[in-house]
Image (cartoon, rainbow, N blue to C red):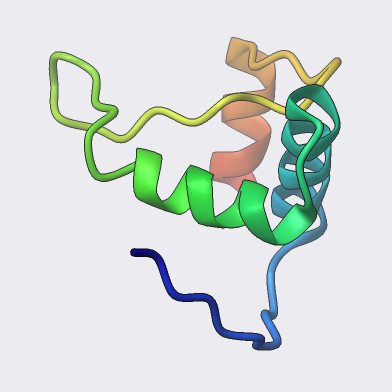
Length: 73
């Protein structure tokens, strides 16, 4: 049996957008979506062992966006 707890999360705008998009596509609550995505990360991995999450709609990762993210660090 699954137990639920109400809490406050401090997450990035992109993470929130991805969770909202998932919730809309699966017709579930935002809390259910966040729970599912967190638990999914325990088993969803690439061949190199990195977790895989669904992307934000319309957000495409390119070599340029990777370079910009690295430069921002």
